[in-house]
Length: 112
Image 1 (cartoon, rainbow, N blue to C red):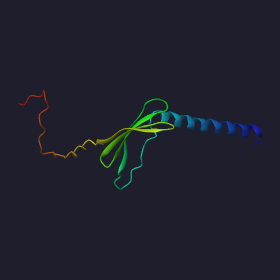
Image 2: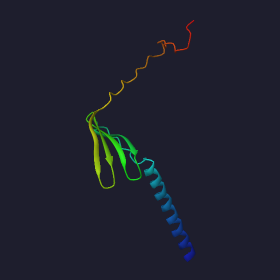
Image 3: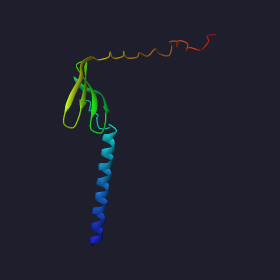
Image 4: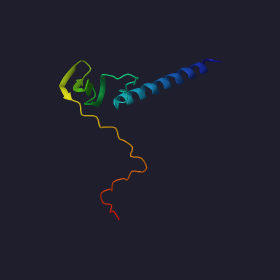
């Protein structure tokens, strides 16, 4: 191997690292980096929603023990906007009616 092969390898490595870094910046800008890993136990703290206000600040809605808190996060400070927001009730799980149950008529349908 001569020096041109080594140079080509280094240029290709820099190109791939730049692509990975560019994709990380794009993913962070669109808010794709806020996923939590779920485990088997019940968690007390969860991130409900996150939205970018501008290039440097984000507003996040955090739930702790069925109480939500609205927080603005910046590069050098955090500010609590509202606290003690009651969490909305979770919808009851849907039950399957089974194949023998009749479906109610959809509005606009005529029963015959």
